[in-house]
Image 1 (spheres, rainbow, N blue to C red):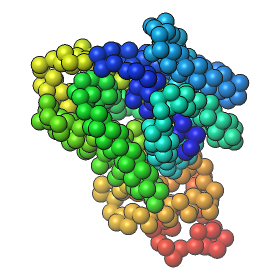
Image 2 (image 1 turned 30 degrees about the vertical axis):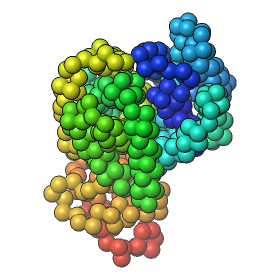
Image 3 (image 1 turned 45 degrees about the vertical axis):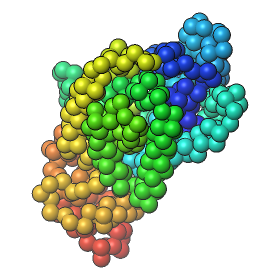
Amino acid sequence: MVGSAMLWSWLDALFMSAFFIRPNQQDLMPEIAVIAVFACSLPAIGFSLASKSRAEGLLANKRLLVGTAIAGTTGSLLLILSDLGGGWAALILGALSAGGFMGVYQLAWGATYAHDGIRSAAPFVAGGFACAVVVDTPLLLMIPQAQVVFFALLPLLSCAFLLTLRPELRTYRAPEDESRPRTHGVPSRLKRYGGVSLTLLGAVALIMIGFGYVQHLVSFSYVAGASQTGGIIIQLARGLSSVLMFAVIATSVRRAGLVCRVGLLAMIAGFMLMPFLFSTNLFWMSGAVLIAGYTALDLFLWVTFSQIAHAQSRQPLKTVALLRLIAVIGYIFGAVVGIALVGNGGRLNEFVSAETTVVGYLVVIATVLLLGAEDVWALFRTQAPTGVGICDEGGIDRRLQAVSETLALTAREQEIAALLAYGRTQPWIAEHLSISENTVSTHVRHIYQKANVHNRQEFIDLIVSPDQELSPESRE
């Protein structure tokens, strides 16, 4: 948590223009620096998608991790230099170095998040966001010169924590040797080999475009810059929401779905408030609600893709890399659109309110797609599938976990066992997990053998009956 918090604090510094000691509201340099760093992270992400095996080898290489961390710190110092007179040349070199660090370390920490799916991603991501607030707060009280130097050291600190992890916690799960039917077309390939749907990726892209647009409004444009107090309140809202999310998830990982749903609704509410609060001293209110919602969205994306990478994806690294690719491209596009449509400094477009409303509607559409995606929310296991007839879902989940631990089920067997307990058929499971029915039948046979049952009904009885003994020997 603390190690990944260093990465998120470093990203916060980018968005807060913390590497620019003397930012000028009418100067686009701080925002262009963010866009350039995001763009320069794409080569590392693209390499992971194009050559998975080589990328996994590089991510496991300590020298590479140390080298990219040094590049992150060097790039941060070059961004500071660009503000102190180094100009655009220093900014470009800084973006190249810092972008490489960002691309590599988001994939590296992604392996830790995806190690145990939702059970690792939910607390680690939420805890990382909360710890980032703890890191950011005292730094904001420092003099600017001390603040920028400390922020520049965060990549090295993140590296130090990452290298303390066991190797299996910072490497992606090896793909399972499963027979899969041939697929044709992009949607089918995405679903069968990456575990994601084209609808999910499209919704993520739309929401990240909205995020880029909003960041221009609340972090870099005159709209938010006119009120320094408002900007501080927006950052405070983000920090409080991070701590609250972690507090809720720490009590029960199962509540991650609820946290994400509330956050997505808050994001919509923030967009809907914006047109009414433009040109008023209360604009910060919509920005605070919106950024708090986007913090929950970050949690939702990492948890969703981590669970897919853990349980459904044939190539986990590519699943996480695909998330980062869509998120980065979406942010860059949204930020450029914000600069073009909103303007900067005191030269705001007179149609800003209407444009923000249109962007808000697009985000609402994307959010509805996410909220209505049964397959996505099934990953959180916050409720039983419709029509199954199981009411005590909390007890079922706890019972499933106990059975899985006692019977030493593999990760894939745990996924299939849960779906069996919720009444899903083997053809449905094969389609849902994007594997062949023969593979499902093999896993089901192994589950029944370990549980010493002969059919699905006996297995369900074992799960839903608290008085049943778990071990096969005692049940006999």
